[in-house]
Image (cartoon, rainbow, N blue to C red; front, side):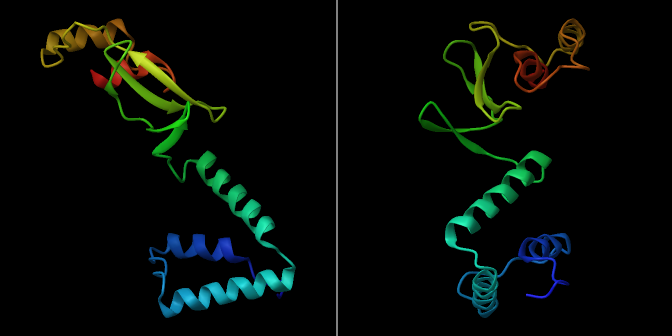
Length: 150
């Protein structure tokens, strides 16, 4: 491989930036890309395990940079949707979010048995002022999600 080439991931990102769709599996372009990747890996002596680690690192960088948003994750042995409020068990609502460390946490918010009545402008204004909804804090806190609901 020559020194001028930027690499496979650089080409993929450039193609995405131009708005081009990736090659569909089974197409001629896809087969050519797979053959080219295998050839590059053979020249560089990259085995499957090393390539997986490289891919995983690139994926983690994209997630941390906010280029890719996760929609599902594992929480206590089951798959849950991230960032989508749902009917709660302990409180009125619950939502699963990922904290800065990368762990999935459950955030409970709202008082059971109480109706929200957010359609009343006076109540909405009072709630938002009382809970400082202009600066609700991080997504891992109940105040953020309460303010988002209001």
